Image (cartoon, rainbow, N blue to C red):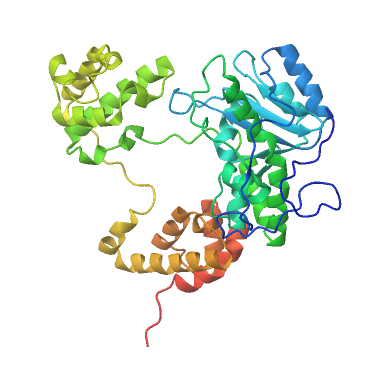
Length: 437
């Protein structure tokens, strides 16, 4: 492989011959500055490589990537909605001088040798937080990264999907019709492999354009903090949710602790089946069926199978499991029924006015600061600061309100230094009650 110039789409003069010269992007627009249609990108410039499946092939990949130059584009495909786990079923890489590589991690123990080879290389990912956990399972953890989705958010782009950004900034359109495919399928169809290879085809080109735009807006340091935080949490296991069964869709319709115990029992029974089968829980039994059974409390198979969601053949075969779960919930003593757990943090905002009108007014003033500052710097408010941090600050402000104490409080929640720098002074002004004349 040899170093290649980026694909060129825009028709503006390219006097240096080193890549596309783009019209400066308008982050608030929904598309390119000009009205020319994007060029469909249907195949990688070097063709679609077969997946790497052996340790010998992986060793060759390590050598190729080590000999490449510049950042490396990285992506991973999971089987969300099909499998219980969030493991990677395909890993895609592209680096100048090394070309594109597709790796099937299933027959390989891990990718640690590749991780070591890339230790000093910047990784370029899109929506990195989605892929970092499954890459960490394979022994791959970046030391430096650039997240093109997050960079686009910081730069103020309205559409931050990979296809939208590639079309707007590079003039190429990507097909995304395989994004929700079952990537655990083997063998993977050729069209899927081409799709996967195209996901990394333009990532480093996109990185360069976005980096230049961040620099133009004086936001490079902000992005660096955000990227460093992603790296720091790359191998951190997901935080376990307390009582995950309470997130069952439609559970708000289930009234009473006894009925909620039936949701809990069915949820755990389903989770056990899904884990053993490595199947997405919703494919084993939909949430709607759990809620309906919790409301009706069926006591025999005929009644159970008459409930919508329990009529499919695979679900019928598990009828005894569902009935046993309901029997267990029915036999629980009162003291073992679900109870509402104390909330870690402030109540839901819609209840503030009733519980603490002063705090509700304080939250409204803080939100005005966040929205106004976000508009000033062309940022989504949620990227300027986590809404949860503002709620916690407004519900329980520091005893002495100063820019320093407000800033320390936000940093304690997990805010970045750049966020504190933009917000602390203004929040310190609005947290105290307004003086009345």
